[in-house]
Image (cartoon, rainbow, N blue to C red; front, side):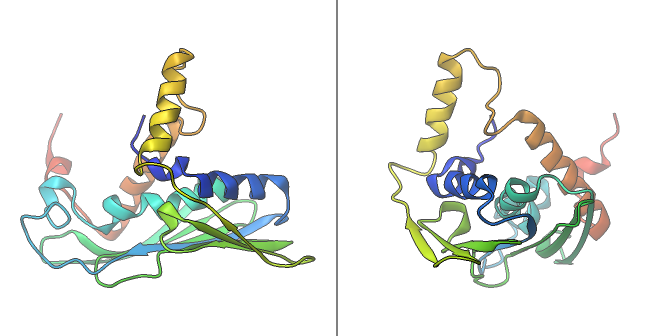
Length: 211
């Protein structure tokens, strides 16, 4: 199972429950960002093309998790990116489109300290995380026809603890995949990122290998 530990956190699980309950109505829009100021070092994996460097592969899976959780995988994708002299993306903006009419706007950057929050908007209200979206301790919920509320979450153990529990459960029950993080989602995510890389011009050394 992919080490996408953020998908197993209490705040994310609760957000999905709120979305699935219909409290926010029909979800139409997701906005999420993640970024920080990274000092350039060509030997650091974030800037090394041989290590798959760049903001897209290091950061974008976390904002994407919120888009997929609320809207599913997209029917169309557009992206623009800022590349450095090494050819890795230091900043990438992604627009996801859905046949049913939903949209998601995702932003990842290594050029500055971003808000690092997610927002999910529906026809009957919206919710937002505090910082950081990949390990939120608060959800701020704003129903259209009711009072706003803040739901608090206290993490237990280290970041991977909740995913370890799920992996243990799957092993004990003889499951070959977790319903929370199916392997198909990992494949679809990488296919989506490959599409984005091709559109913005990010090329890694292994892309040039022939088989």
